[in-house]
Length: 518
Image (cartoon, rainbow, N blue to C red; front, side, top):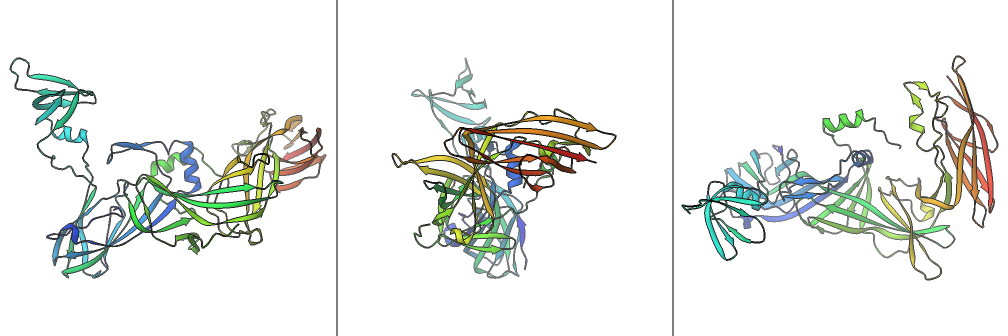
């Protein structure tokens, strides 16, 4: 099979072969598969400005980058002549990746191929027309009068014309509300109204062909948006899920068969960006049934594929929301209070392969007690389905006026079935904590450090609460808790969890000592 890999095209395309008018091309269907940037790439770009607005030369506007991309398959019936055909594939997305098109004749794949491709994207806009008309005559309509002359130059504020006025041939016209119109004799050569791919396509067999074009486009992505409603005693929640497709690719996808890929699919990051990521030291840590679900889900390779069960149209410069699955109710949920006094120290505790011996390291501690909601994505909780990454917005009903009030929001990663979802809602108002170092001793020649902490948690609520105190043992890899006033669970070699019950209007104190050896 002869194929040709080159530039990206959009779904709403128009094919025209030599001696064949555009209307002879017939739409045979469009498929659109949308991907997300991986969580690592999204976090890095947010931190280093990778999602700042960018200038789109096709539209002359600044657009917000979309964290994702799409793969489009377009099938068209079109007549081809035997031999060489010049085919104009119009309405190409302005966000194309110009290296990804695969063009195939499904009618005669062995003997139909692209010999050459050109991508034309010099689109019409006022400044480009003016640029093409430098040293050429134009007509300026200003306050009922006309000024004729050759355009010498222009900028955002002024036009400079050479007129036939013998006394004052050079005129500078201000580009403001006084200029009513600019008139030109013709559209300059090289400017087009729509981005276009021009193929030199060779066909051994003349007649009607079904041509399939497959390509990638940037500036289109998707995310899951979840809405959770917590019940009155905060022991259960109702969960609804929507898919949001964000399309700024410069093309409309009409009556498309939509698929979404859940998972972190590898893409090649440009060398300059990859180098910057590595040099920066970037790291990541890792209902009521209303009817048939809109999306069919299945495993695909090592990802999950969500296929919309009906065609849909995704307009350019739009966000489309589609229900992912029918809402589920009564998902068991636990509320947890977590105090993480040494937050941020885990990744910075060691220098150059040596234990951190600085006594005051990590003493600027967090004082907030965080609120988490936790539920398990399992079948007996009315879930047990692959949950794609997205934002979860949580509400609770005010018992007095029955109005739903927003209580927090968190972003979750892709979550397989039977795994736990943890949502950070914010910080508790009536539960506070403080953490201080009470002893530090370092014997470098004997290869050990001991450090002791005192943690106080105060509860100003009318009910007793349990606070999970999370402590990172961040100075060195070999760490042992040698003394503790409360039982603890070792979550890893360098993280311990201390459950601490605090009575109403009371205070609980935790003390512990850790020893590092090397």
